[in-house]
Amino acid sequence: MAVWHGDQHKRKPTGGKKRPYRKKRRFERGSFPTETILGKTVRKISRRRGGNIKIRVLSNNHACVTDPSTGKTQKAEILRVVKNPANVDYNRRGVITKGAVIETSLGLARVTSRPGQHGIINAVLIREE
Image: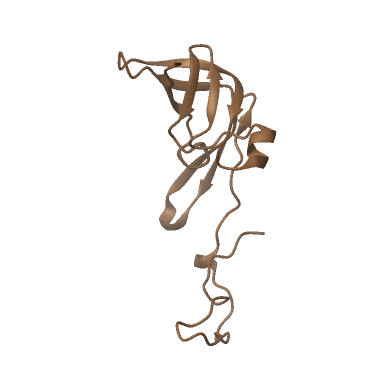
């Protein structure tokens, strides 16, 4: 089962209701969000529209962390998810999304990539005041 991204359920600009003139179409189909968690590396490849592929990270325990002061990027182990401002529930469950703060072996870092869309976890070190 998938998420439907059609606009038949919305109202017209005048405020009137849209009456269904056809059924749902395959191209209006979406997908459920990938909730990346901490764990052994598991990726899922899915075919998208136009024959494109999307790599989703289901779980990972490493991140490519960039130090903004030196400009160097290193592969670092993720120790834990500190906070996720995207969703309170994600914060509790330790889901990694863009903007999440993770604790790595190099220090605290903020995730800059979208793991469920890009297939990799990129992060930038946060300066500690």
